[in-house]
Image (cartoon, rainbow, N blue to C red; front, side):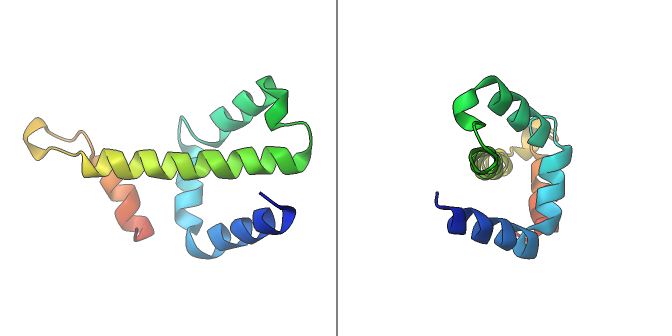
Length: 93
């Protein structure tokens, strides 16, 4: 991603997905895990822009996983996807 695209995507998330971003920050497999992996893999954290790109890519993957979990929800087995559904509803996605 170019620097302009990184900045643009960051602004878009701040504008359109503010609440979802905070779910990512607080998620067990969210921001903290992303940063830990990026620090271990220097190709993802050689410079601040690479780290930002890694974070944004993992954020997109986290959203995709959340959507898959919500879509796979089976009410007959209980609350397996309820948290994902709640997060997506609150974020209006």
